[in-house]
Image 1 (tube, helix red, strand yellow):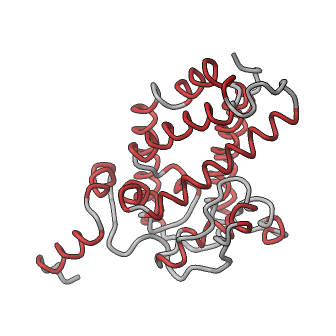
Image 2 (cartoon, rainbow, N blue to C red; image 1 turned 135 degrees about the vertical axis):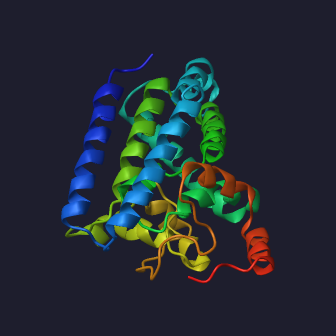
Image 3 (cartoon, helix red, strand yellow; image 1 turned 45 degrees about the vertical axis):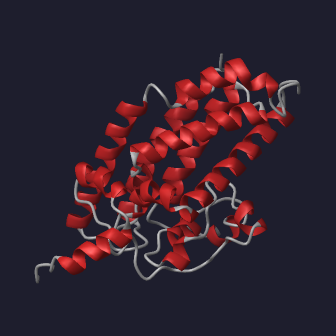
Length: 266
């Protein structure tokens, strides 16, 4: 069904995760207290493990089943396999995820789940693991539709998913490097994605790309800035249960609740 490249790519992604943890510990871009980092790390990795346990049946396997049975009907379905088809498949898939990410910020029904990813008060590689399970489930449904629409072959689905995971870990890294800004005109880097996690809505509604940054340039959603604060003002979760539950409480309801119930003075 696949070309056999998924094994080495997945191994490379795991290796990258370990390397990024070391790099951001040795050369952090933003200082993070040990207590805050420990709490965030625990919540994020816990969410990742729980989500993958729940989504294991639906995620990559469902995309492969859809691709194997229906990809021939899509835009690229009748194109012979080769570099051109692979490149087009990757570009179309990356654009689709950009659009989905954009919609996740614009519609309250989608934002209620996606905001969980933005609720981390710190910014480091494990932030890339912090997602609500229903956010991931909806994304899988969208990707299944895109597999059929674009005619993405099963082998390319695997490559797209692992490369996407590779980049999600990379651009959440708490570090910088020479030439990063120049590279950000081609791909999403930590410099660009850090702005996407700003506390201010007018700042974090930007830089929606996952791999390629050209979409943000083309559609005017690119912003270059250094956020004063990371995370969301009213949304905070200290464990997986809170992380899951916050998706069902909008910021308006939470603000109204906090006004009705006085907060304890620190």
